[in-house]
Structures are given as C-alpha cells and as structure tokens.
Image (cartoon, rainbow, N blue to C red; front, side):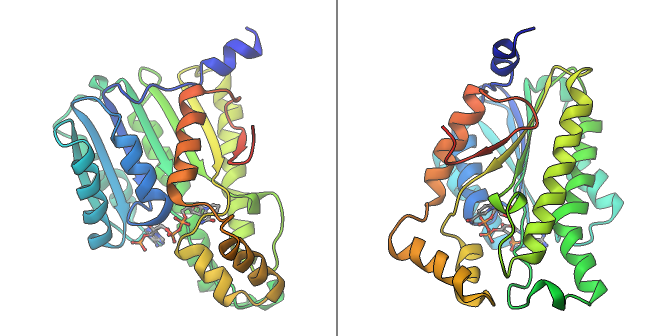
Length: 277
Ligand SMILES: NC(=O)c1ccc[n+]([C@@H]2O[C@H](COP(=O)([O-])OP(=O)(O)OC[C@H]3O[C@@H](n4cnc5c(N)ncnc54)[C@H](OP(=O)(O)O)[C@@H]3O)[C@@H](O)[C@H]2O)c1
C-alpha cells in the first residue's frame, strides 16, 4: 500500500453517527473543539464531556445544543482525573453512557485526550522534591489518560472506525524553563500514543492516532505562564504573544484541527502542529 493511500485512510467523517468523548471540556480549547465537532454530527450521536467543573461542562453542553439542537445527546461527567478509581474509569464513563446502546450503531468513535494542567510554574526543575505533588501531576496528565484510552479501546474494537487524539504541545519536543512538569508530562504522554500507533498500525487499519499541538492559545493555561512563570524570559514570550495578538484564539486552532482530521493527511501517530502546512 502506498503512503498516499495510507494517509487518506486516516480521514474521518464527523457527519456520521458518532460516539465522541472529550476530556477537559469545561473551558478553553476543549470546549471550543467539542462545540465545533458536535455541530457536524448526525442524529443519534453521543457526546461525553469530562472535567471537574459542572458549571463549565453545563455551559459547553448549552453551546453544543444551541448549535446542534436535535441531533446529539450530551452526557456530562464531573470527575477529577487526578485519581479516578478503576470503577470510575471503566463503568462510570462508558456504562453510564452506553449501557442502553448498541456500540455497533456508531460509525465513528472518537476520543480527544485534551485534559491538561500546567503544574507549578513558580519553581525550577531542581526544586521538585514532593513525591505526592509529582504523583498527582502525572496522574492527571499521563496515567488517567492512558487508563481512559485503554478503556476506550476495550469498548470500541476493530469493527468501529476509531480516531484517538492526544492534545499535545511543542513542549513535548522542546524544553521551556519553568515548565518542568508540563514538558516532561507532555513528552511521556505523546510517547505513549506514538507507541500505541506503532503497535496497532499493522493489525488494526480502522484505528488512527493523532498527536495534535494546538499552538499558543489564549486560555487560563497561558495566562498562568505569563503571570507566574519563574523564568522571566518565558513570561515575556507569552506576554509578547498576547500584546502582539499573535496568540491564537481557541476557534482558530479548532478550525485547523478539523481540517487535519477531516483531511487525514498524516501517518497515524504523527505529531501535527497548528503551524505545519
Ligand atoms: N493553551 C495553549 O497554549 C496550549 C498549547 C499547547 C497545548 N495545550 C494543551 O491543550 C489542552 C487544553 O488546554 P487549555 O489551554 O484549554 O487549558 P485550560 O483552559 O486550563 O483547560 C484545561 C481543561 O482541563 C481540565 N482539567 C484540568 N485538571 C483536571 C483534572 N484534575 N480533572 C479533570 N479535568 C481537569 C479543566 O477543567 P476543570 O478545571 O473544570 O477540571 C479544563 O477543562 C491541554 O492538554 C494543554 O496542555 C494548550
């Protein structure tokens, strides 16, 4: 099979009946991506939104239903992904939403691992000695992502076309001062998805894995870096992006994201950045 054929096989059609799960959907990039993806979906589609803030999730749901009032059913799951129990991962997320439904009805199953936290940006790498703090950070940003993804793959097997998206960052590839936890967590998380893509590529043609780096986007996360990063040159980068209006808005990166997944012009497991052509 040529690489061109392989690449086009990665395109997804969001206008089908879709099962869609978005973590970190209560604000920022996750909210906008969920709204814009849901706007395309066919009748009978199911959307699961996860975050800690019920109010934030309710607002995302309201905006989804305002754009696509009759087609989709939206389930909200208020959950702290720091230490979800195995039961919360395996039953609450999927049994609660799918027990009454036949999984085969879905033509597309898509999960977007968007949850993310920046960690403590007020310290340098040499100053992280609190093991509980480290556990909690990697639990949200790596461990729960891996566990949730594995549950998704258990539920949806080769009979369903599946797209797995990891919202990654340039920080998975390049170190930034003050962003110790964030850079190391993003690197570990992306390598998990690259390994998954490699393992499944030969035996599972219905699965596509994408690591999408959204570029610098104006959200609470970048606000925190600009205001609190211990390294002043890093603060200045983000201040400059905001003042020069070169920082992106969530809708801009979402439009690019939709183009990437609907075109499918990448090899499964690839790292695709907002600024890539
Ligand atoms: N903004 C950027 O410039 C940028 C650049 C590259 C990559 N990214 C990535 O894009 C993704 C979204 O970031 P964002 O900028 O939109 O950040 P954000 O506004 O801070 O949103 C983060 C989301 O994650 C959720 N979350 C955080 N901790 C959680 C926890 N313990 N349990 C459950 N949910 C939790 C938050 O919801 P609750 O607080 O309600 O739980 C929120 O919905 C992240 O993976 C981030 O690393 C962002």
